[in-house]
Image (tube, rainbow, N blue to C red):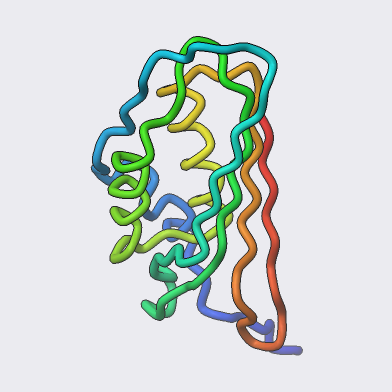
Length: 129
């Protein structure tokens, strides 16, 4: 009988960081219509919940504001909340875009997370709302 390969994944790890408390994302009233805002964060960090090793990546958030714009200082503090959080980066990208959409209620929003190479593979996660 062949032994099944396992890499030590536990399903409960997928929920890691899903409901962790984070600083609020603040907004301010938008004065204009029909334009895009792009925010880049080249130093995003979080922690892999499986290995407990740090993950590093660049986030690029692009959105068309409706009535509200993201306040950058609060967004920076929000992102810093991930620094010691155990969360898969796929989940981080989706949680961030959901929190941004909830806070600013943009016309549309896209978040691209480009993460550094790990184990010879590089991951780029794109989420749209």
